[in-house]
Image (cartoon, rainbow, N blue to C red):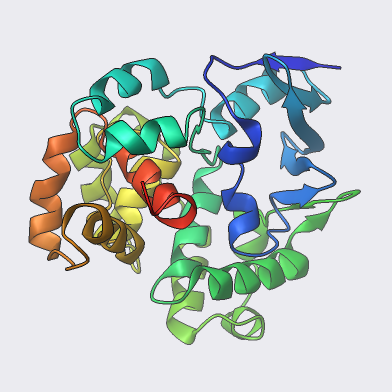
Length: 277
């Protein structure tokens, strides 16, 4: 066993539930009670283990990416204390104890994933993403490596539409692949600076930028106010089912500061798994 220690509380099955909730994800493949993913160019098997996760193979570089993937940057102990003062989270957080939202360590994959999910169901987006991965990615023993930007930069629009992209989304992905942002610069910017930089790119709006902050940069204050799933979850838990407007959602997110990102993920997961909470 190559143990990667993860701060308690941690529930591996619950934290990786998203990779099973919306169908098969070839780049993050759940197989025989383990998660398989390409990390640093190698296929890595990640499974539950006492005190953390069993990661094979494991070295310093792989460990750093897997720690990010498994959400170790989040301070769950502080969030649990914060949740005691919220009428919904005080019940929801114990029901989902040990849930650490997974974070995508690859910025290009994160943005392409968001583009595929724009204005379609998550299952439909996953199907398109899988076909993209099979057409342009690299098959490993079990999982697939998500297509690299340099490979997609060589594709043409018809190749992407043939795997299910709309013409516009194909153009968005090709534009991103051919002119990637300076990722290191984005990492150094404050939240609003990241969003301002991303929304200047064709096809990337506020929703995509919010999820980049949440699911790649793991910024604590990320709150995807325009996300339909989050709107429904907030409506379910706080508004007796009546959906708030985006403006109301923006304002509502402030009640969760400085834990908007964790609150969003707990509300989304709670709406799927523990709606009675």
